[in-house]
Each structure stands twice: as C-alpha cells, then as structure tokens.
Length: 221
Image 1 (tube, rainbow, N blue to C red):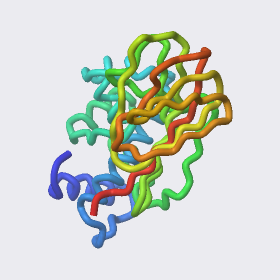
Image 2: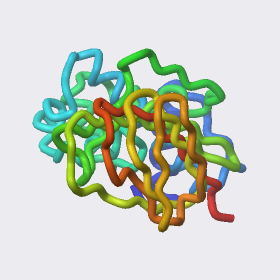
Image 3: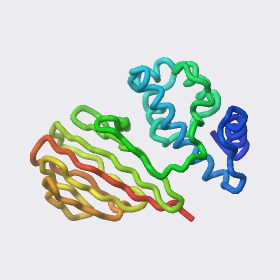
Image 4: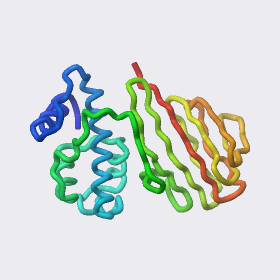
C-alpha cells in the first residue's frame, strides 16, 4: 500500500460497503497508519477464529510467515492483491478488514495468552516475543511485548530504536546491558532508558526469565 491514491481506494471501498466515511481532514499518512492497525487486528481475529497458526494462513495465501506476522503486527501494509488473497483464505469479505476504521481506538483489551507471537531474526528456540498490541495516539505509540527466555545462550542481539523503553521483570534473573553499564534485574525490578543507546540481555542468571518490554515512541514531526 503506497501513496494517497491507494489509501483513497481502500477508504472508498470501505465507505461503499457500510463503513463510516473517512474524515477528509485526516492526512494520508495518518489514515494509512490507521488502516494498517485495523487490518492487522481483523486479519488476526479471522485467523484465530479458524484456529490457524500464522504458518498455516501464510501457506494458504502463498506468502512468508515473516510477512504475515508483520501484517498482523501493523509493521507492513498489505496491497489490495494481498488483501484479496487473505480474504479468500479466511473466507471473509475484503471489507471485513476495514471494520472499525473510524471508531475510537482508546481501549485495547488482550486476554491472557492471546497476544501475537512476533517472528523476527532474533526469534528461536527458548526465545518468545509476544506482542500485547500496539496503541497509537496522535502524539505517541505504545508497544508492549512480553518476552520469555527459557534456554541459555552465549550471544544476544543489542537493540536500538526511537523513543524510550521500560523493562519490568516478572520472573527469573538476568543481567541487562545498556551502553557500557550492566544491571542485575530480578522479579519486580524495573529499568527505564532512552532507546537510542544499544541495549539488551547480556547474561541469563536464572531461568526461566520473563519480562515486559514497553516502548513509547513519539512520531517525528
């Protein structure tokens, strides 16, 4: 999905199938972001109703698990052709993906165990990243991820990103690196920092380890 023309086509499609008309004063970039968030939620809901895994739906649609995971996590915007393939595989009309586009998105409710498994190059045996949803407000985006580590590893990736991050330990013990500093984190401990400095686990002291990572990102002006 690229540019205002495609956004307008999707908005027009939604409007003519019962969705509320798109507000004309919304910038195309903001509208495209809202579309991505709504589509992500609807695709995931439809997949779970069929009892399918991400891999199963990806196979039915002829796309990679990584790409589907990005769509379900609002990290990639599907083309109209991709939406058509998803619609056919999930047995829902294309317009179902736009339901709630213009509703207020001020509450996000995720039941226990119902988060979205994030698949990226750092995922693997003993490492689980469970997205608890992405809450987007006009001036801020919150990205909570529940991280579970169950196997020891000698190497860990270091992360850098915009905004700030809060780590809250739920179980286990680990050393967490931030720049040249190390912090021993145990259950109940919290660590908050600027995301632009390299950071990440550097030593797993007591398994299993589980912590909540909450990123707060302010969109660029």
